[in-house]
Length: 300
Length: 176
Image (cartoon, rainbow over all chains, first blue to last red; front, side, top):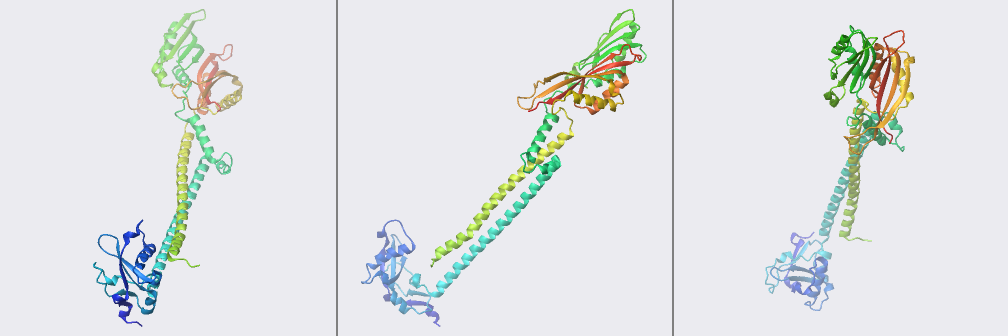
């Protein structure tokens, strides 16, 4: 069981290799992570006393101020493997060399990173990653379940809409609607055809001028027909714009009495009776014409 | 085979997002389908309402031209309804059949024609003619009496009888 101080070890500065590297000589686009460490390692190797960089474990800390300068701090991997106790979590120099003019926190130069990261740290990171991944999986599953529930709800509603549609068809078209599903004349086409048929034959906007009904005019005429005038009607012709009465009366005065009786016929104007004395009596012709306002407004 | 942590993270994330993307696509499809179905239902309901409204309204034009036999059958039915013998129906003649000029409407829409048929009823009294016309106008809304001529039936025993010539007119849609 290591002591509390052993978990954050501090080595004297002279147990490390140090250098201040000019990162600007690397040129090219700025790189990060492993590639940057590798490039800085090549620079660091040039100041190492005959030790290949592959046998050195180093960390690089960017120095404050202008320029791209790095403080390199490293030691041999064998030294690390030998000098670090199993319970140590961080290893940093106790101070930085005097040639480093910048104010650098020596405690921040932890060398137990990367392949030398302590097992508890690696375990903790792995656990954090696992938790994060579990969160991602859980969120994904939750979102998926939510979306699928919404899909199911929409499909149920669409099925309800389809059922309602079918009900409308059956209400309007009757049992034929059900039988015509899947045929070349399906319910939707039947409905359109029915609507078209009705619009052509019953629509108020159908461009059909209604024929004047002469029945009402005849009924009005007969209602006013005098029963006390001796008249023998030879013919009565009722047309949309005119009524013509031909007949025979006993005396001239009877013709006028008939005309007077028919004068109140609504919507019609009676003309002067035409009469002619014959051997059998008085031949009579009376003509009524429809008033212009009635013609314009339609037949009563 | 050992994967590095970033690859594992990427794989797990991708594996988690794949069903999300699939479900999102299904949701989009279901939503589009639902919207289309709702719009279709609204259109169908509108048409159904229109159909019901038109069925309740009066028929203004026939769906097709009526043959003389049909008019004879209608006249006989009306005679019976009015309590008159069918023998009084003397003649049924087609007078004209012409396209209706449509000044108010544009070039679209169906074409309408009007057919006129002349009915002759023999030896009826004025009240009998009135009963016939009353029954006719009540039951034959498509056929409008456009002209009525009553001619005294000469030489008959009963001087109050007339031959009635009735020109009935109906509009119909020309076959498309």
